[in-house]
Image (cartoon, rainbow, N blue to C red; front, side, top):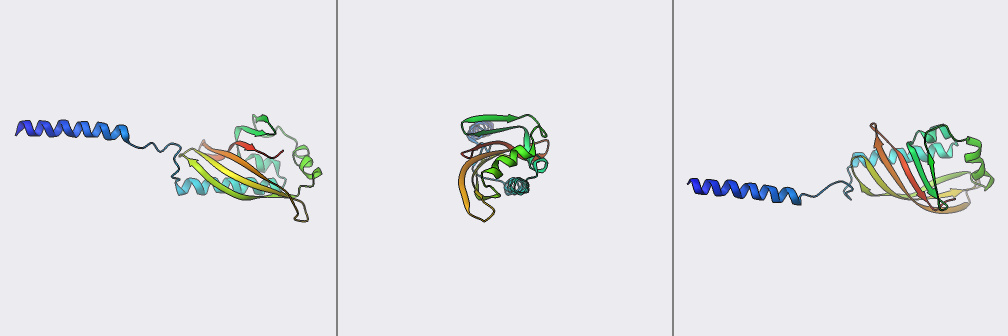
Length: 158
């Protein structure tokens, strides 16, 4: 009986160790916690609303800092909020005829409890509703200090 008990204990230990080694890792999973996706979509909604309102201060509250943007083949880094001029940021877009933008799609492609990759496409429009263009992009949102925000944007927009 002692031999059988010892064998069962050894077998259970081996199975436990093998199972632990094969346990799936959920970091960067394609399975997304609904609470995470709701929080991320809320930030992206605020991001677009403040952008369309030309509210630079509010728009920057949807960022994490440092904030990174890769567009036009150039990487820009914004170390903290308040470093840009609202007239310059929105004025250039308005000179090109821009009035507002909207999300065409936002698909979370990978997620963990504190980082999410979002495949997006947005469109820019003139005041009369005519289309300026569609722009594919990848947004990475992170949860830092208990708050979700946009950490990195890679876009095909100018």
